[in-house]
Image (tube, rainbow, N blue to C red; front, side, top):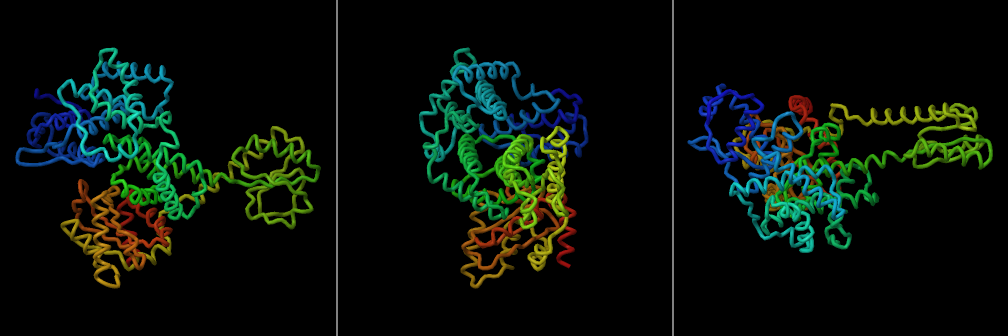
Length: 546
């Protein structure tokens, strides 16, 4: 290549492009070509490794240098992730994708959707458009995708009648002589498009009853972990059935969706994210699929929305000495300005003294109220604009107070301390096998046979899906049926070990009995805080152990 200096941000993506073009690149070669130090190249490759790891892929090294050994579907996964990230930045995507082609595809696809009156959520449209453009562009360069396996999810989830619908959507591109798709490419895009929020294709009777049962079981397990019953939330069930159904279709196409909110989700709802991740591991085991952080984040949003619906079940007591006409008038006014209030109860001043006010959030009254622990908003019987402002201000104060009360503090709960204190370990190991076996060997089992079964279930779980979370944390766990006593063991290594395509230096072994699932939430909250601040986590573990 021509030697010239390029901006450091741009240089990283040039190296990505060259790796995906099957080049073997050495540190010295890149240092010479870009006129930068080897340490700068090392930083670039560290960024690139992290990018690849988000798709559970890794670079390979030999005497000739660093290279990527992967199939075309994997190459397109990395390209798509990179392009979607660049589209949301100020950097150009020109080195990866033909912008003119992308504009033509976008216009043609939108036209086809409009003609067929099909809606796709805007959040998925960019993902679909980039996928279509990559297939076309790469095919023109003689790089074709090949679907591997026997389409096990497709046979179970996807009826053949979706194929012509997707073909019809893509036909507009063929009519414009942009590209003629092969059957395999249409099959790939069928999984992707149907799996991207196309409710148009989804009929309740088309979703297997057994699948719905698996989703209900997931909701039950997450509810137990969060210690909040979400099993009666029909909206949560419907949203998850559709989302997870479509998710498996996306995985059939080996396609992932970038979640732009993933970091915010982890930071804002650490315990929820951790419990959902733990529940999804069991859900995914049945279908032998692996989920990225992005996908776990999307599912977490559904559960957080359900939690918010629970929080919104506010109760207001309206105290009025007048007749039912006045109380109905005021109640209607309150509901207009406070739509999230679940219950507005009316009472006279004489009954107030004998009432149980424990579940009342605040009181609205047209008369003076004697001393009460609950906040009181005094209004006129006609409910003026100023009255409504006072009600709204009290409601906002209540919401803020609840949020502050629920904000997690960076402290380890005393119950959690007692639970883990005797099982915090510091050691050195060179391999995943040695570290895991050491942790398991230190746990209590009534006999060796049971210990071996639990050990086998831990390794089987690792085979199906890596238990790596983030920032060097892994959470291996085995089947509850082989756990006699709930325990959690924490191993902190002095040097990180290989964990699939990741590096791990903190292992949390979960041995949780079915009836103790609620003990997962505080531990997962602790882990998620540790992912944000590893030094804090290690110092806290040393403190608890002492």
